[in-house]
Amino acid sequence: MEFKDRLRKRRRELDLTQGDLGKMVEVSQATISDYEHGIIPSVVIAGRLAKALGVSTDWLLGIEDKNTSDWHLTPTEEKLLTLYRSKSPDVAQKLIVIAEAL
Image (cartoon, rainbow, N blue to C red; front, side, top):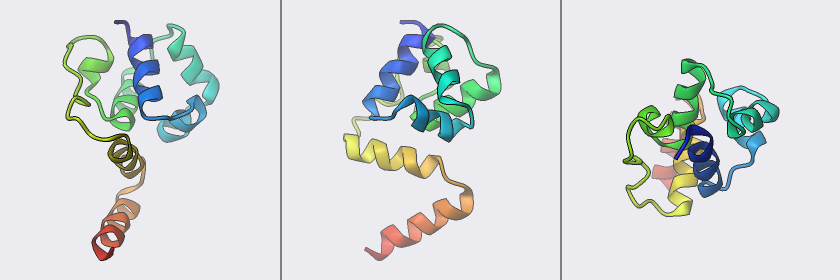
């Protein structure tokens, strides 16, 4: 499976729009569309995409076959993890405090 296919597949698994993912990695929706049509991102953006999608860059780029998302998280857990990873360290820490208080 190629980068463009892995990117689209994982984005859809997380129920993210191209716009959602673009905001998470600081690129436009059109740029995400370009990636899903075969344009390869810079190393920096590939790293951001992998982090936002909860996968390794090696998997996303097709270097390895094992997807780190194979940890069998539920869709809700995956969405929470993606949301957490998209936040600044300060906001992420606040999310932990809120979760612990529930």
